[in-house]
Image 1: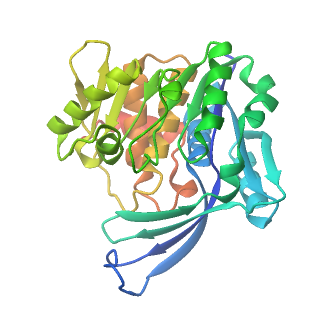
Image 2: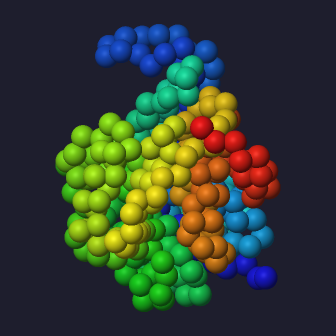
Image 3: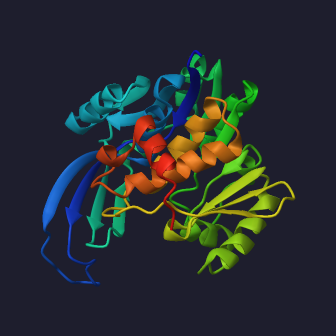
Amino acid sequence: MSARRMVVFGSLSQDFVVNVPRLPAKGETIRGTDFGMFAGGKGNNQAMAAARAGGDLVEVVMVGRVGADSFGDMLIETLKKNNVDTKFVSKDETVGTGIALITVDAAGDNNIVIAQRSNLMLSASDAENARSAFDGAVTLMLQLEVPFEANIAAAKLAREYGHMVHLNPAPAPADGKIPDELWELIDVVTPNQTEVALLTGMEVTDLHTGVEAAQKLKDKGPKVIILTMGDQGCVLLQHDNQPVIYKPYSVNSVDATAAGDAFCGALAAGWTQGLVLEKALERACAAGALATTKMGAEPSLPTKEEIEELMKQKVKV
């Protein structure tokens, strides 16, 4: 079977990761135990995750912006090494490459601060310049680390070519507001519990309250809502069906960085290659779990073979 194409339209950044025994309190300075630099940005991570999860069945094209600097060069080379087409990753001469400062504690939980920089320069013209990639693709993957106007333009172009449009609403706006014009173009939305709480104004503490909050997103327009809840698993809501809970795989977690991106990339890759939703979602759950077993974003994104091996074990929490 020949490869089917998906487009990832979004952010790229250089990640600086510090390991600490625990996350610092406000105003506190603590000593880190390790440090690493990794390719990151939600768009970049999801493109690499999709390419690895889809193997030779999925062709991934990245559309985004980096700075005309060494970090941008490294990000483009890393994408290429992961079999992602970078023809439509442009270099901005006026703004540097986006960066992320990540602190990871001994339990694998993290705090992340991003400086979007060149990602804020991504525009509707970048989508139009990549029209040849959209023509013939199956799926469009979006996040919220680039301007809404750019995402709307990409989603409209995807609609023109009949794509499935998948939005990972991360990071969710502090005010919880996503333009109606964008919501109306979305087929699938995959928030985590923090994001769904911001988007609905509801407190989310467990699967029950998570489902209630996710139900509210139905009024926004998406046909499929998949709520990820970390070690509590994820919930699928579609049409008027009852929610379906997917238990998480049992793994030794050390760093949650990019777990959500691994989940979304694998999910989109599954749809792109033609898997039914339930099968694609099982693969996404396995990918998200595996991503927590290694440090950093790029090194932790699992391959198709690793995902299939974990699924065979069928060991869930």
